[in-house]
Amino acid sequence: MTRPILFAALALVLAGPAAAECYADYKAKRDEPLKLHYGVAKVSDANCSPGAAEGELAPRLAADGWTLLNVLSTFGPEGLAERKASAGEFFLRY
Amino acid sequence: MPESSSSAIESLKAGNRVVAFGIAAIVFILLGAALFLFLNLPDANAFNAKVEQIFVANDDLRTGAEIKLLEILAQSGTTFSEVLTSYRMVIFVLLVFSTAMLIAALVFLVMIIALNRRISAIQRSGIQVSSLMISRESRAVYINDLEFALTEAALETLSVLAEARMDDEVLTGAQIEAVISGRNEADCDEAAGATRVKRLRDALGNQLVSELLVKTIARRGYMLAVGKDTIRMI
Image 1 (cartoon, chains in turn green, purple):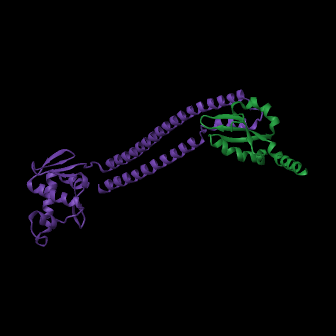
Image 2 (tube, chains in turn orange, green):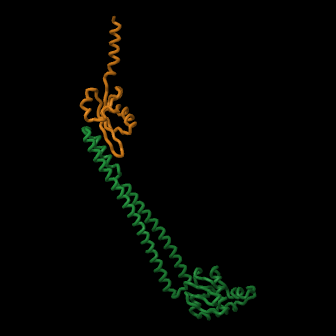
Image 3 (cartoon, chains in turn purple, brown):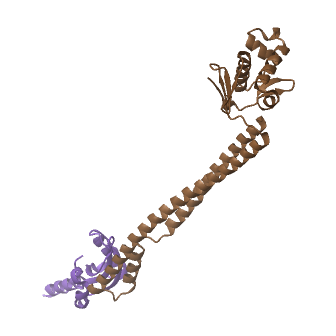
């Protein structure tokens, strides 16, 4: 009887970190002519700090011709709503 | 006369050196100025970089409208950079013009100096033979386009002297006689050649000509006192 409970507990422990999603808001640019944008992107949990997120986001943006300028902050799902309006079309695009 | 003509040539050479150095100096200075100007003109992307800096430095600049405004600012800066490019062109053209003007001024300056020297040399030597043309056909010699009729013998002597002058040689009386008569030099008399020279001088007007044209070089012989390049034979 105790076995299924143990499994459930184990599953909960394993799923725990996966459920805590991490997002970062950043600023990027494109040259000639100068284009700027503010965006929000999902980053992996391992890179859930502004410094580490930069490393992960830069190649993703570069693939589309954007140069990452800086990462402002990283936050959980609770911060998404307040940033959605500002990010506009770049909300969770990259 | 040879002294003055050689000094004129030397001054001409010195003048050419001055011109070469001067032109090199002018081109070098203006090239340096051009490089300095071009390097110091603001870069076309200077404005964009500033806008980008503002965007990064202010975390609250994140709404779409604000970003659009920043982009418009950057675009107006880029438009201004096109004006800068045209300024560059104008500066370049002006530099080329000033180079040409300076070089022309230098060349004219050196030309004036050379002319002054030549004029003073002419004033010192009195009459300068600028062209000596021997015409066997009309049996005459044209000195500075003045025609002097000569006897056959005098013309022969003058021709021999002219040929020797072109080879930078000084002929003794005996050598002159040998060339004209076609005999061996050892068999010729110094006096015979001297007589030929005397007759030539007589034909042209003795004193003036001996100084201006047929010069006696002590213990060496006779030589035409004109520049090599002035002699023409027809």
